[in-house]
Image (cartoon, one colour):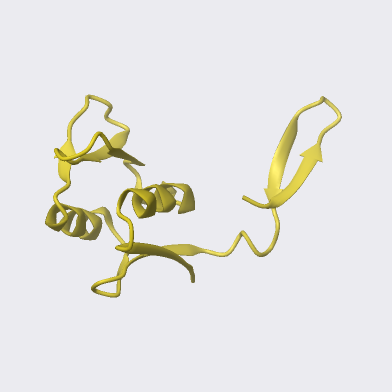
Length: 103
């Protein structure tokens, strides 16, 4: 993540994104070329790859697990909060199948 650290007078600091990192990102399923624009679309793709919905008890999370691994994909229930951090988690856990692109 790139940006600039801004320090306030009360000692609190925060990272402010620079213009290049503030572009909208999209998760793309490479074999189909499909841009993932909803959790229903993502669930269809992940299910086809062997992932299953995981109901772990946290109502704020939408989760998937795979029996053949210890990996767990945890996403915010609200798709509007689905950002590049979650997208890259999916990319890492599904090598060569997804890509994050600037929109």
